[in-house]
Image 1 (cartoon, rainbow, N blue to C red):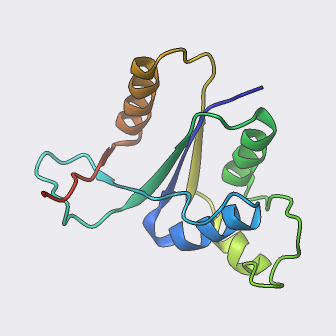
Image 2 (cartoon, rainbow, N blue to C red):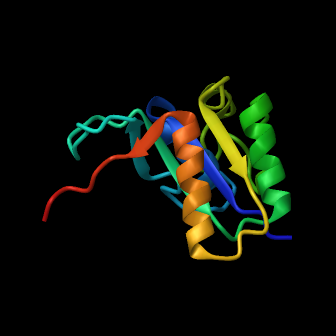
Length: 137
């Protein structure tokens, strides 16, 4: 079953959390959208405090793993071995998943782009975060 997910991580853990996602064969730089605390004066130059990804086609088996990663710091199953062949080490991965570094928000039954955006905006508002504005062209 498809279970949409938003994952948000603190900026300081982003590089290693992305390496964990990569070790799960999810590709590089998954968590890439910069966020900051809600601030009407924020600009594209405001330092991000958090980053997010939104996966509207995540499967429930994946999101269950991501929830345990966020809630308990449990490392996900991977095809390889932690710390071998370019995979992040187990210690670094566990440190990245320390309490509060990753949050997941799961939804289902979102039939329209408008409701998808409303869900995302509600998640960000509840977390006290906003997108960083884009750099002017």
